Image (cartoon, rainbow, N blue to C red; front, side, top):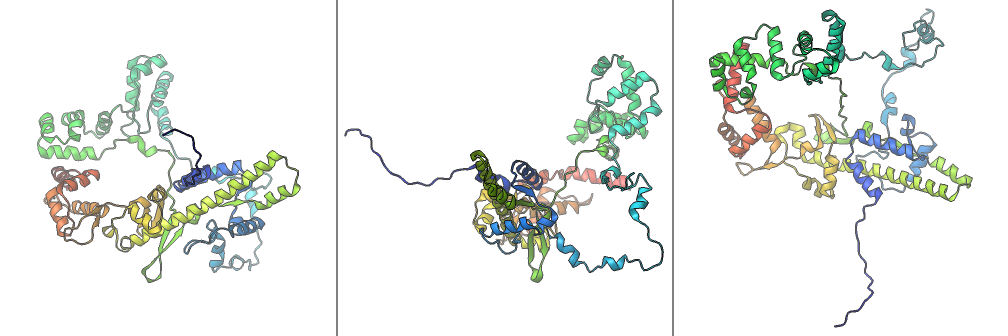
Length: 511
């Protein structure tokens, strides 16, 4: 058979990952802060995009009307989702409050009226108290500054160290402590860097270790605990030996600790209880790192008839508008070069695609959250004991989406319910079989039962893993002993022997 070249016409379909499609996928898994940062970057690059003010987000202005006209071509939003999902409902708050501020603050008395701005102008330190009567003040100027660990130590230096050379050594040591208050640098290196003798550095370090908070400037955990015990006059030879063998205490090797310290079991338990009351990280109270505030993306509230109302949090919805009026005015001029027209068209296309992607993101989050609420209705009514086993496939099939889409939506998204604030992934749990052939149990619900059983223990009645298995089986949960041990260790719960010793020590110290 001779070889020859032939020409065939073939039609096929393939999924092409365009930049716009990749952007839509990335928007799904973004948190609220990441989304705000991303939109800010897009607004800087695109002149047709703008952040809507509260009035514009409430639906006012010609720009909002032009955007509403553009949104008419998109599908209607589903039930439970606002028609303008980025609309801020704060405008209706004043109408819902039955208050007449004109009557409440009327001046019926004959007393002379005082002009508040003029009164504030007499006080330079008050908001609005500027020389020219302007309102150019910043409320951040009146917020109390939180004291840092360094500032707290610097306040104590003049009372204990007066010599200039010792003060220089103290500042060099202060520069080497970490956030927990530990000194992580070598004394030889510090002495060499500032040109002082090592005994002088050690002497100044001893003074600094007497500062508040107790345990500061320690070079190890054992030294930190020893400083605190020394200030309490509780550092005896037995306690010093225990601090020298903290690795044995971590391994719960009580037999060897009793032999090394020369104490009996009761004394060892008392020493452990005393160590438990110390502070392993003395500088942690001065942590000035930024606080990460969790903002709920979905809010669930009770509705009539035992149902649940699911809605998106308006505070997490981006307020972005496409300035169609500005785009129309630029096109009316008709003086753009070819490159400028292409840039303007590209900006309009990107802005429209971003608006559609944000709208689709809100719809997808709403679909997933609504299905999760429907599946976990018993949890919302009765608590974690009734949390049902759930996986991504079940939710994906119910809302007719892919599992990867559901996984992206539930990442770093939070739901505020009457039971508390939960991450969406919290509602997905492994299924555990029932001992009586009934409905399966959620792994999170089983872990909660284990925690409750152990929390109800007393020093004279400690449950072993086998006892926990029997107790769970009596309540309809079929679980192996090794699974109970695995769940217990994952929750950082010690064994029954360790719990018995610790509860006895706690009972002895409290008594």
